[in-house]
Image (cartoon, rainbow, N blue to C red; front, side, top):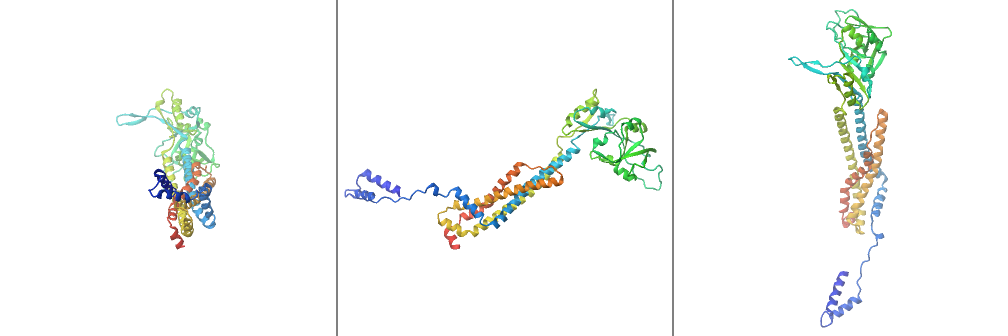
Length: 450
């Protein structure tokens, strides 16, 4: 309207008169005598601001406490499930990695190198482990224990039994394997004594006929105590049983075998050389110990020995961790989708119940954007509150379960802090369709329907 009067005034001022009869002058006088009525400018303080939008949205949220609790409960369960499952996956993966590291990543194995000999491509040992190998490698940094190990070969006709006379009518059973080791075997392979004791350097140097039985081998021989000084017979020679061992997580074959001192094996069975040297190391010292051990054992010809060090991370351990993460992540996403659908259903129901209110707001001048934004903010606030509570519950669940299982809880701080943001995003995504539907309701149709 103001633009119209400005354009008319400019035309009259340029021409002076509209015609010879003075019509233009009269029109100018009428325009000056009848001022234009302009709508007043709305003050900034009277406009519907973002603060008003948040206040409207949050006030309606608290008007229905029971529904608010049920809606937030869905989001809380979804976010808590996601945070907890990711925390459980990380905790379980860490526990699996520690199990693998405890068995594999703290052990170095040194054996004689093999070389081809003859036309039949037969292999022979190119080197030989010294009898004092444990004492040499113990001086290296990172070595916690070392033991020489050799499997003693006996004739097929010779047996290992707990009775001196073989009963011809008794069924034939396979004899347990016979091993010759040094005194630090238990410390090196994480073994434990069930009863009795392990032999020492004195037994080894004197070649005493003493034996230590693995737990399962002792059960098969009917020996469960050593205070009565039981004996076993190896190739007809009597050996006093001084101990029974179990555990042996690093070398489980010892649980089914018979262990004697290496000095005794050299004297009674002609053991010519040890088969391998097992070294227990500190975590992370594998490459260094593997490189230095062959030099310490054979300084003139280190290539005659081979040292196998653990990899930085086991491929099997990584595969298991990846599988666990995928399974827990899928479960968390499913739970989160369930929470999002709960928000969408409740928000859509709120739109249907408040159709009359929406129509009244539209009739009073509210725009489609303001109506849609109101319901969108409601959904985002509900999701945000549910995300905060769910993140706290998820972290608490991981800590409680880890404490009960005596594990080290592992939770990514970004996952915990991102739970609230993720809840808000879920609320935004869940409230998009209900907000769009509310914004498209016409005032007349809403009031007539109400």
